Image (cartoon, rainbow, N blue to C red; front, side, top):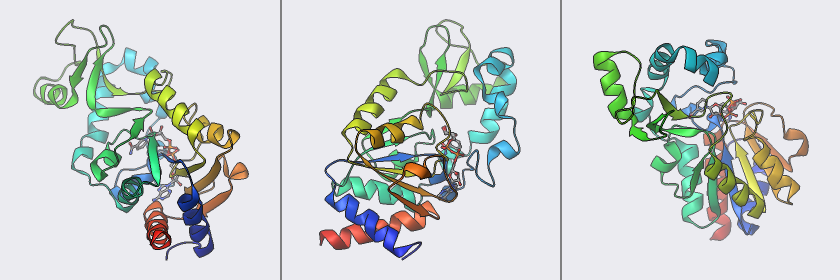
Length: 254
Ligand code: NAD
């Protein structure tokens, strides 16, 4: 068993005894698939100025941001879900986990088999028109951008297209946020995995669940902003820890 054995047993017991367990994930759940996080030791912000992904910068320099976005995220469709995504999907399949709320845009939870996934920061499936709000397959936009270059424009109205991910300075998608709060409010256990828990307002969600009486479990490689209110903290790699938790849950459930 990886990590702290007693923490793993305690987390497994909490899950088995839970009525409504919810998982909240951040970029750290996908690093073992080869996608860098933002704030970890190998994080993207060590190399790139985060202001580039602000809505203000994008509006003034759309072509430059599109180019960078493509360079950073184009490989993601070829990246595979890892043991952490698979363990979370299996926990949903056996009825323990009811929902996954993710800050990630990589779609790896769904590809691992998770069904009830709420994406707080958008996705890599679409580009969105900032004028008519129409959505266009991201792949089509990328193809055209690679062939012709220039600023991607909406085929319907000619408006500026933006990747369908939330940039700094933009509000979170209303429906996703509302669903996330609903799930967090129902939770009696919430597992926060691979998130520094500093990006607001998303990081408010585990906090809200805890305030509503849920047990808060934090699984992360480094200390997080909410460790001080957590019921259990398991420090280490999400893939190792979640695989061990799943093993223990399946053993306890017979
Ligand atoms: P973050 O970069 O702020 O924090 C990630 C945390 O995960 C760090 O504390 C790091 O120590 C930890 N971590 C890294 N690898 C881990 C592992 N294998 N096991 C356990 N913990 C590990 O990420 P965040 O809190 O999600 O906030 C960053 C924002 O960036 C999010 O809003 C998200 O939308 C976005 N983002 C998404 C992706 C993606 O879709 N995969 C990638 C990078 C950033």
